[in-house]
Length: 127
Image 1 (tube, rainbow, N blue to C red):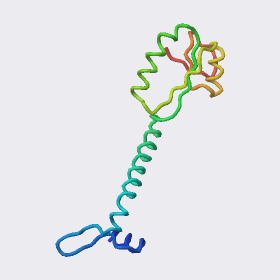
Image 2 (cartoon, one colour):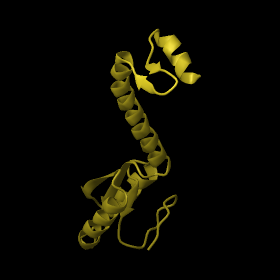
Image 3 (cartoon, one colour):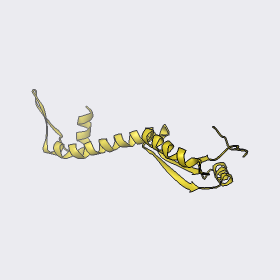
C-alpha cells in the first residue's frame, strides 16, 4: 500500500505486477539508485548523530605543561585515537601550568596536563 501511495505521488508506476511476479519498470530502475544513495546517506547521518551523542565524535583541545608530558601524551593520544577514531584531538603545544589551568577554567581547553599540585578553584583534577 505504501508503494502504491509512492507511485501515486510520483505519478509513475515503479513496478510491473502480475499474479506470478513483480518487476521494476524503467521508472522504478531509474528511481532505485538515487534512493539507495539517499538511504545510505541517511544511515551515515544516523550513525554520526548517535556517535556524537555518545561522545565519540567531536573535538577535544588539550594543553600541556612541562617535559613530563612528552612521554605520556604520545601514548595517550594514540590510545584515544584508536578507541575513538571520530574524536579530533587538538594539542595546543607547551604552555605554563597556570595558563593551562586558566584555559581549562574558562573553557578554551578541555583538558590540561600539568604537574601537581593543582590549586586552582573550579578545576577538577585526577592523578
